[in-house]
Image 1: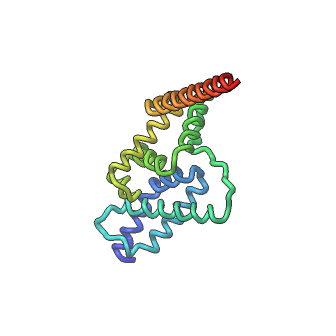
Image 2 (image 1 turned 30 degrees about the vertical axis):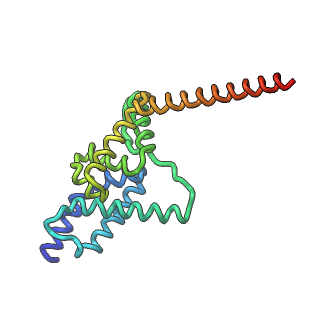
Length: 200
């Protein structure tokens, strides 16, 4: 084995824990996450010659894993409509209240779109920079920031039960529109009944 190949293998081994975190964030299933990591590592080893030494190895590996996840998801959608019930992402022995809180957090994380959940886990738990998130996701830095912000805000709304200002505004506008429509309908009916009376 050449020195370059040995270094490559060492880098793959070193990044495995972070790949597992990303895979778990995407799949929300420990077994599926392990399978995804193995598949991504196989893909990376097969594409070893395409990696340019000196570039961001971590971003390259995370991108391979993400692409493999998307590819597998497309294949799954083509072959089956069955949704496996996700196992708990945070299996921790704790007090009853803590377990309930973790279950609520797990359920809220599962409701997030895949791209927001991945950005939140990698950015907050793994401490990745927005630049690294952007490289992994193939998006602009501003988009990566937006995904983390929206994920944090949405979790806050779901876990505290508070509505965001935009949701309140949207609901109020909807209520106002319904009231206006009802008023217009009532006015139309009144006008119609008056015309009927006048005709008699």
